[in-house]
Image (spheres, rainbow, N blue to C red):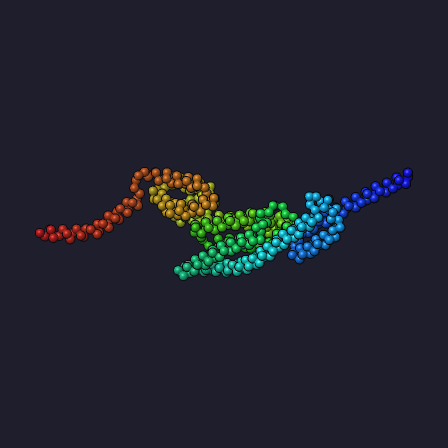
Amino acid sequence: MKTIKIILMLFVMTGVAIAQSDYQKVESFKDEIAQLRLDIHNAKSLAELDSLRNTINSLKQKHLAEKDLLDKSMYPENYNSTFSKLQEAIDLRREDFTQIETLQTEVVTLKSELEILNEKNTELLSKIKEYQSIGGKDAQSINELKRLVANLRQSLKERDELVRSIVDSLLSDFVKSPMSLNEAERQQVFEKVETGNLLYNIEKTIRDNMEFLKATQLNAEDLGEVKEEQIQFHNMWKRIGPKLADVYMDKGEKAGEVAYITNLFAQWNQRLDREIWERVYQVFRSNNLKVTPFSNGNEFTNNVLEFIENEKISGSQESYITFEDSVWTEQLRTAWIPVLIDNEMITTEQRDTIQTAINNWEGMYGAETPIYWYVAIAIIVIVFLLIFIPKWKKKSKPLAEQ
């Protein structure tokens, strides 16, 4: 009886040992597969992927004897499907590297074009400053300066578009991805940005545009275009800036570059807005209209309304004519107000409020004919008399003699 118990006990222990051994085999296999998936995801070159493909083939041969056991333990997956999915993951990752190599080729070409434009812009800006320091007033100097400014304006526009192209080439997938990235993805983005020298080129683009504003005085149409381009460029940075801050968070001094560029965009925006408001104020100043300076839409509206009210009390009809004709109609309403509204620097309601105040100002003079109409009529009468009186004298002389 004791012998039977011992045999039964040995049989049970053997069964448990076999079960434990099978469980360990399955778990060990799963761990190896999971590690391979991670290695494929984190691979940094095609050579690594080729090495992993060999590892997968070796692993498949190594566990072939346990195929039936693994098929039962991995349902609904099985032995063959598990290795097929690993091979698919390898192929997909190879496509990523192929795309990256293509992008790197494109970026090298774009970087070369960018360096040429950077040199050209630096040279043009230097020539513009040189002409301004000389202060030439002759027609040739003025025309040459206009030509240089136009060339620099076009070159800056081309360079801005080129930088945006590099961003699209390098970071289009990055922009669409979720905010959180794993360490391998963060490193990949960092290498792309550094390869394209992206932060430097974005910073230089902003600085050159600000220098351009300092060195030139653009008209309303050009400033409107510059403002539109600045908004597009800034919107691009708003999409990638916060994510790049996350990527560069543990990169030491490099982390400060992202924050610095964000601050530069704010300076560029302020500088451009200030330039537009200063140019609008020059319209009043050049016509000797004492409007209080302004630096935003509310100040502009309130100060112009205050000027109108003061002129209604102490001004004259000539003051109204100068403001309405030479300033509001010819320059502000046709050229500058559209720029201000398009870039949300004033609202249509604020424009309409000013227009209503102008209409009320005009109403002070009733139906009275403006002085310049009297002057125009007088000139017409004088010209008429000078032309036709001599003719009348010639016709009346023969009659008198008769």
